[in-house]
Length: 86
Image 1 (cartoon, rainbow, N blue to C red):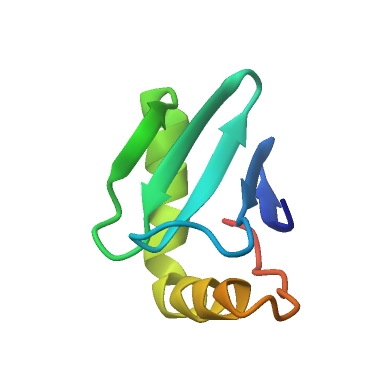
Image 2: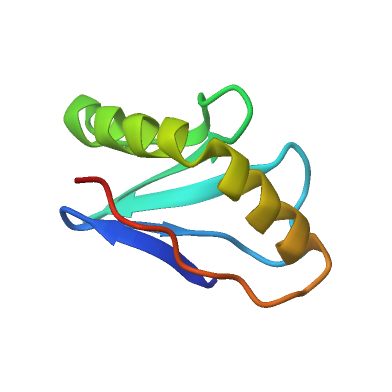
């Protein structure tokens, strides 16, 4: 699962040729959540409210790039890294 960003110990990744809706994975320690890119909501799993808040803030700043990465992943094209949350 290619890593596309990392910040404050949170790892953001995306699988190739995944199921709809467009989403990414966020991991922090033992916790993991799948986040819908368009709605910016949790599809599966859980993160602490603090971690989830940071992930949603980061995703809102990079929503168009995340959708581009999703399209690239669906076509097995190389993914690029996105800047971390500052």
